[in-house]
Image (tube, rainbow, N blue to C red; front, side, top):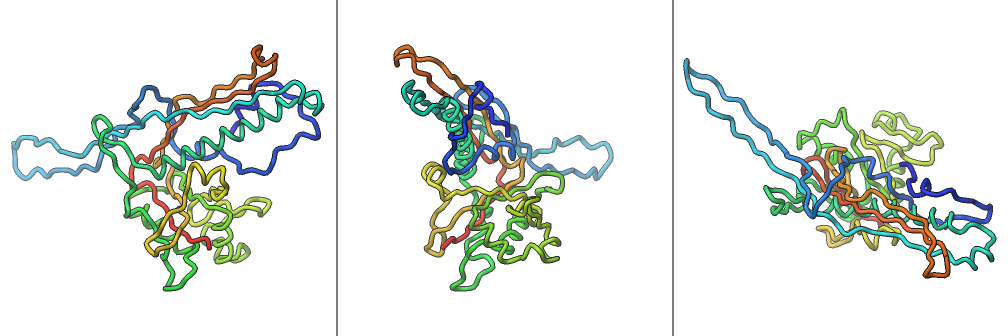
Length: 313
């Protein structure tokens, strides 16, 4: 994704300007449907259910209209998030660098993580349907791969090939044709390790299962038809505002890993990105770096997505 914040100003970078280690973000928005919205409650789509045909059993019979379900999908406007940082003139003189550049980079990373957190929270949240968005549909239990799938009593219950297979099965039973669409699965570094321990990347079995590593062999790119999206979801910058762990049926705590096809998640933008670098006369003419965004996310149809429970202990 283009780093939109960084393109808003000409910035000077010095050799002693570095970003601290932190999780990346922003790529999830490219893995779902997107549209611009307005108003407190916006309609995303009309969803037409399956219809059937009628048989003509006699001559000159009247036409009976075919009935089929139709629903509407809505998204409510969330509160926007912003990043603001004044740049002290004395700090700039002492550091001997253009600190504005560092703050722009810092703000850009913060906004991209906000987009990811909104995506994650919207994915696990309820859908709003009905004529006026008043019907709330929670996450369906039938779209969940339980923590103990493929394990006997006392197992590790970590991520596995079997859980990936059941995720594919869930999409298939929901009549999702993902042969011509993008299918994704979110994993953390822990689940990436779990899968690579089960199937060695040098084996023919890995290739037969659609396994593919990045060109530098540093990341698992795809497996069993899913594009793997790696996120360090345990980092506080994600976990504190978009938690993906919860109690499972075995009395433990499991990581919940989303899987979906691109048409199964929709993002609605009320404000994609507003940025400003200005001089604050009220702060002795210091510079201010500001960025703001407002986006909401929802699942579209329940059969297009689900999540896998994995223990990490």
